Length: 332
Image (tube, rainbow, N blue to C red; front, side, top):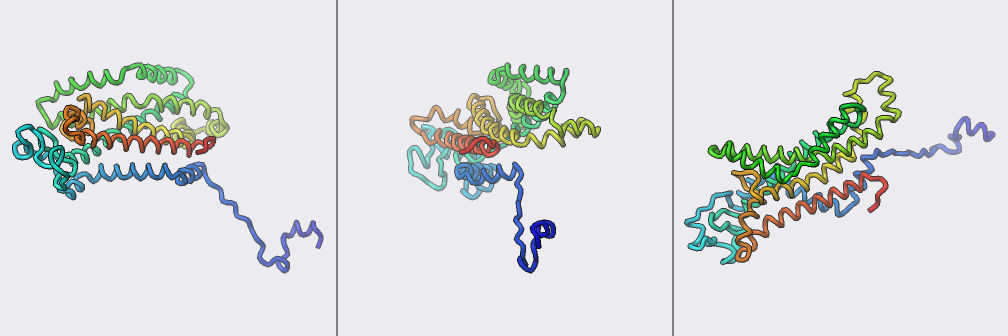
């Protein structure tokens, strides 16, 4: 048998009864990024810490029952002495499982229950605000990047306008309005302050993602697959959300992972300044009340600060790892 016949007919079954075939398995960019992320031990450790905080936020009531504590159930008469210090636990007494983190001066509220529910408040507000900001930023970025006329100019002007507004001053100005409007109705004040906090964080969180998505869309809108979609007569909505959006998953995921810790820190900072949710525990509110007791009762201040620092640090490291995993030019 000649070489040409072998090339045409393939391997002879008598000579090679079991021809070996080499299977080539392709991997999508998302799969490659996830594999790189899973191989990063620091990222996996941070993901475990974030997951632990999420579980604490979700199961805060069950954890309080497990430790035998209740939120805001203290009695100043029986739980504090004549100097407003707790009658059990620190700072004047040793550790006790009855109040693992001690009791709050003046009120006698259990600080462990306040810590659990403070985690729930901070993560709920920051997560909802991050989701809203991401949706708004992606939609406006897609529209601005794809349109070439007044649509792009208007959205760019709005983005620049919101970037010039002082976030802290606006937040401080909104708080008195809410108290004046619903101060006589505690239940409505609680809901109004929560909604206002989410809206404030959302309004000032979408501009960076809008600019990022707009720039990516401008670089993609002249590509061949978009031109082919035009030729096929696809509607604009389908081009935006079926053709362009799947190519923007990586920067959106990275932006989301970096925005969440920033908003958690912002919520705690505003609560510390007295501009936050009312009627429910918050880490920032605890820090605000604890600063006057630092010399005599440092654990009162350390517990919420450590909670914020660990969570924000883990989220930042995880966000950096996600960015590196989705960036093919970076190696850790």
